[in-house]
Length: 412
Image 1: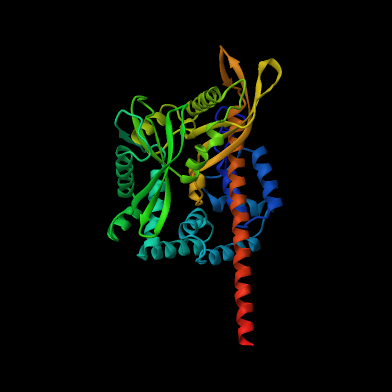
Image 2: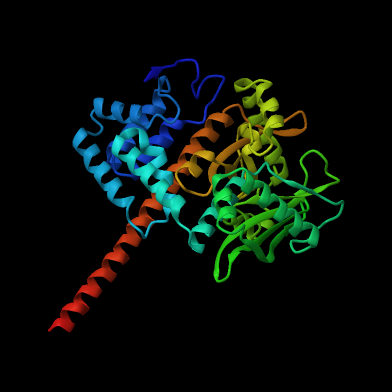
């Protein structure tokens, strides 16, 4: 553990709090109970000087044990449950690998299980395995910054220029990954088909699209967007996104959203990105922009990670002309992808805007409020996944019990 008093949420460089995300994962896999996890979470929020190396799951767990939030017996029980869970065939193999990758530093048995599972995964030849690998490539493509230029026009989801650009994009992503190499060795890449439009956003002239990817009867879903390119608004590009994000981003309720008065949706988005750009400058300086130029498939900054801003109600007027506005921000979240979740987090919060020289701006406390909302969104998603897993286990258990009962009756 390291003590660092220079980077705090109340200082000049608000940080994406990796500590709270790691804590949420430990709670998700039952290394710590809900009540002590909440107490530890509050302590970490109140004491930003308590720091660990990024992604240091073992360091955080040792600290939790030393501070009596959990104990070695709970750790051992959770590790054994983790190992048992990682062998359960009902859990998608990529989800198992993702959690094992995140927690591998906790115990050498987890690390050994990770290597065994990864080796087993590489040996699979079935079509289903090809589709899982295809989904991994789509996640890589869903690096959000990757895009393929298209002719000057407003292409549809099904136009030849769009589908050929998507095929090129998928092939390019496959060439960058072990999953793609395996698919080629096993007979080639699956084909996209059934291209369809989810919705059209007249604000930025973009289309949200879905397609099926697969071979034969086996298929998985991919999402993509046809949009103007970031640097040249006269050109269009196709860009891959998780299908869950496309379905949410382009549904009728989002597209027809008229909330946010008197600030307005576009002004909110501009103000939020401007505030985060300022934070990026404090944290990264010019390095972030050079990284963005060198590695076009990954956003280098917080501002680039903001995909969309959607007000959920009209604003309420505060003193001095300030406006308090409930907002949902679609945030590109690589940490959630690490634990096998779609890499877009819904960041929900009430943020304050103020007129500054005739234009709307976020207030000075926005970066801190935003970071806390990001962490809150991650915790909500992990808790939702935990509840869904528990429900699935309950259904599976009931099915097993029913089968056993049927067998007993037959034996009689």
